Length: 494
Image (cartoon, rainbow, N blue to C red; front, side, top):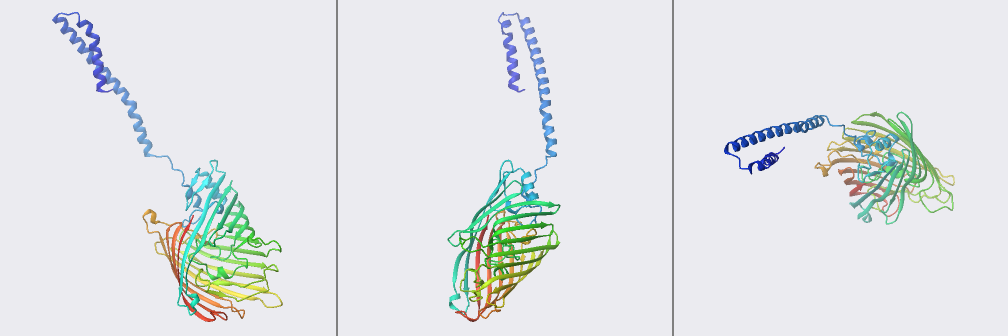
């Protein structure tokens, strides 16, 4: 009750007494009347003070209750990103809808969010949690300069788009998922990943998925790593030379089995996306298994084996290969088999050994490919091996994905957009490729040092300095040649 209300009440009482004053009472009566009015006003003020006290009590009580409530706040709902990534290594970004297992899909749906932020673009959920959708893509822009070669045509500077991809991925319910992605880097539309899939659990710690469509190879460590996640600007010669003739993609089916410390896959495909249906496709069967016998929060030991067998159709008899050795964007700098016709099929296999401890990682790969030739000629054998390593000087863990046995996008501890330094990685690699099992085949090796600066989990800058050597039996670069290539890249993945 306010002071203004008190004054108003007193005035009302005085106004009520005004008729009595108008009768011109004697001085004694007037004195008695004033005393009576004063007593009435005092009594009224007392009653008003009592009412104020009664009203103040319930007003104070909620404040006390609120203070008690604030001391014990309600539990905060789990972060959906944390819920999704918990089964994964903490140093990689959350998997997209097409790469999650059943438990991760259930956790994301239970979080009750319609927009889930992980890395790059968001994952959208329908209000009922049935439908999931995510735009995806990557932009990798390179510049490369070669110098020091004894062949003038190799000393060139070029630019190029290593990848310019747009696509979508998503799911319906817990088990069904899909992904589609096209690449525009060569000024034409190239369908890369395009599949539908089904996933489920078999038992505790054991689940599977099956994909059908245009599929990316699961073959070798860096051969199974996306172009936006490789620690160097180009994959090793094991990944680029010990490969089916159809390349990294083919249309077919791929079942995969996952357990706590590894995975296994089997892929059966025909040719990659094309418009040739006049003859049968070539057929490729490919398998890979990886195992982590040692696995902790700060370290992993990686073992891997893989192999493939390819039967070529009669019109696909060319087995000629020209493999990158000093950077992708120098078409004059390659290790070549020379013309190799009359192939009937290929068989390849390889092994992986590596891992990481804290911020330091190392990976060794080796592989061999046998090309089967017609007319009774012996197989042509290609051999390649590599040894790579890296160190995150900022203390971040290497972005190793224990579910797939490959590298992924890192979850940067202190992104520059949050005031941190980002993640800085120093790398080194030696690789060797040998095609000399045939008279026209060459050989080559390359030593690379590099630096990667991850501004955040989806933006990075790369710099590679390569010293290379080639031995070529024929052509404009015949003989031994060496030189240097410096390449740089800015990449964004979303």
